[in-house]
Length: 125
Image (cartoon, rainbow, N blue to C red; front, side, top):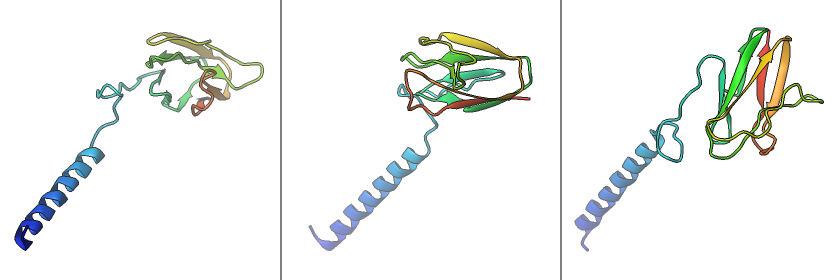
């Protein structure tokens, strides 16, 4: 391989690497199936990809929050308070759990089956 062939090969490799880097950085947040993850609206929280979305919700006293499990694995929404203010128990994919917050305060919660998941927070004003 002569010098000009090596230069062409090097340029092709650099261009290919740059294209791959660009494509990998420009992807939207997706599930393992390659589709865009749905985002909750209103007073809803999704459990998807082993995370609460959104992680914090600010609401008024008397508001009902509904958690929906979008994962295949079972999850829970369980108050960190002792005794727990609310506990969904484990619920499966596309199942929901709702709780009405009638007292002002900050309420942290977790997923009992997956203690490594980041805790969520409800702020009631």
